[in-house]
Length: 266
Image (cartoon, rainbow, N blue to C red; front, side, top):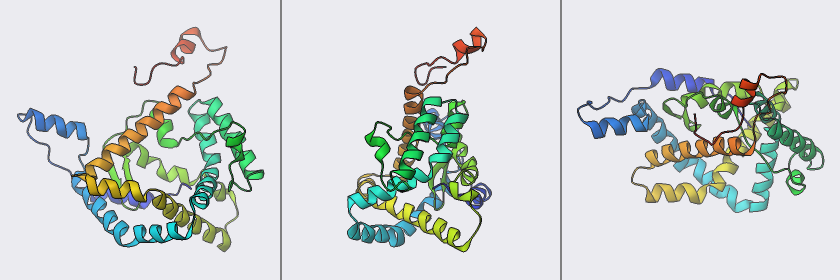
């Protein structure tokens, strides 16, 4: 589920200290600085180390215990349920991005999994050919050419960038439970499901994160690089899988501009 972390984003901006760029005379160091695109590195590393301590002493032990009392099948069902909860938001995001095929797939998946799949606990939609497609508001903006901006590490949320962090609060208003009347039960459900989602995801990444921390000389830089690669791959997948459908009444020049092009081309 997508939740608002507006206070965290604001804190990141207000508290961030800027890294001092090397002199342009040191060409190699200056180019490396620009390539990293991490001018807020001092603050980012503070937040990273804070999260790392929290993960080491709280989240990871909880995830280890959780993995011992659950099976891979149970964790998969939890993931399916959480993904189904994001369905309405992803439907609107695909529509906003001009991706009608993916929007249709998302709609069918939400209807089928919410009914036959008992609220999304099961994923019968995949069995009938409607595999999950993913997007979010950050990827929607990226599809319109909005640059990612400087790298950000958000406390409690992890790797991000200015583009993705700027739309995190909006994601909160796209969750299905927002439309429900407020109640104590709904509040408990929201907090419980968010906590379960975090623990479930961490349990599924126990081996991956441990290997990175053990083998990498600079885990912070590794996580930064992996985040950017992952986001680029997600956008590339969307662009290659689905294309905008230009209406027939559009002028020929505009319809030509909407034709699919190789990822990364101008």
